[in-house]
Image 1 (cartoon, helix red, strand yellow):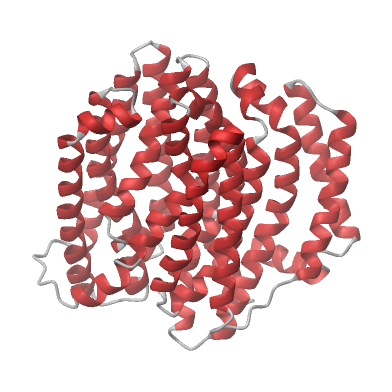
Image 2 (cartoon, rainbow, N blue to C red):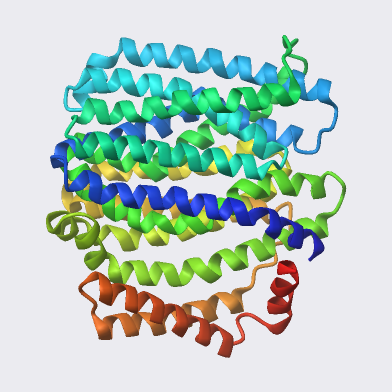
Amino acid sequence: MEGYKLFIKRMGLVSIANILVVLNSIILIPILTKNLPISDYGIWVQVNTTYYLVTGFTVLGLPYTMVRFLSAEKDVKKIQEVFFSLLTIVIIASLIISILLIYLSNIISLGLFGGNRDVVILTALIIFFGSLNLFFIDYFRAFGRMKIYSLILIIQTYLSLGLVTYFTLTDKGIIIIVSGLLITQLLIALFAIPLVITKIGLKIPKFTNIKEYLNFGLPTIPSNLSYWVVDSSDRYFIGFILGAAFVGYYSPGYVLGAAILIFFTPFAIMLPSTLPKYYDNGKLEEVNSVIKYSLKYFLLIAIPSVFVLSFLSHPILIIISTPEIASNGYLVTPFIALSAILMGTYGIFNNYLILKKKTKIVGGVLTVAAILSLLNIVFIPYFGIIGAAAVTLISSIVALFISLYYTLKYFKIDFDYIFTIKSVISSILISAFIILINPKGITEIVFVIITSILIYSCSIWLLKGINKNEIKFFKNMMN
């Protein structure tokens, strides 16, 4: 428990930062949906979807490689060699792919961006600078400098929010709005680069051990691509089959359901840099303890969130978007919320395979899930955007169970089934309360959410889902 105490303390700031990041996505929904044509909002969604897809290629899995190999490293010369070797490769790869996107911008714009070539060019530039920033930001993550890491995340998120909001409210048009993302990436690069260089200096790399690093990082590309396919390709399928407007209908409900991942993201950031220190020193008991309690506390909050968001989806979407979007997309939220909790669970367990350096298995698992996403070709024409959400759920289920199958070959997993059942029972109680009240306006929704938290907390306490020792543990961490 001592190791987990340190882990929780360091994770606090990261949690706050990521709450603010997720809130940004929700804040942008009413700003964009209430001030842009639904087709322009669909283009905005496609810009972000494309960014996350392409950066999965451009970084070649090397930021994660840096975290895995340097998190316990103390030798400055080795840090310099690894950092600048990997950075050079990321620069070359991102430059090539960005140039290729610009060259193919006419074709890409017709398929995804309503024929707007300028948006594609801007997206290519955002991808280039964004790839570099991903690498620089992960440097701070690798060495546990979570204050700087969190600060950069917050600055990046709210600088982008400020620019996009200003350009939207002053009616600058979709091209200028997207340029707000590019300006943000440029400024973040100017902020992050000096911080790294002043810490480790400059060095011309010799690319020592680069083969080992590429062997670790490159297999994560199929994993990154597959994760994108599971998580985001539905926007592409919807755009191709139904048009950009339906992407606009789909996205707010998706964002609302995926907000559950706010509770997983701190674990996703902290676990990869924390667990290797225990595992490489033979402290497997510490590894198991960190993963066990990480999963328990993720599910403690995530399970009731699935129920609350599912039953409040329609009234919340009416408030943060438009009645038209709410009517078309509220049923998307339950599917995506359940998918999010499954992918969060998958992400926590997946650390076992990463510790064993089984990145090929990780890539293979998500590749299978990604292949299942092709069901969108059948589901969307028949079931519309709800079909896309259902396919996301199916893919998430498959990813989790295949991953568990392989993880159990190497580790014994300590999963608290009894707690999970108690959490579900408590969540059913608050669902009944929500149905009974049937809130409509923002005041009623806030009242229902606060009351639901109290009901859930009392229920989980009475059912002894959380015991006295765990409460004492948290109190001790605050001292």
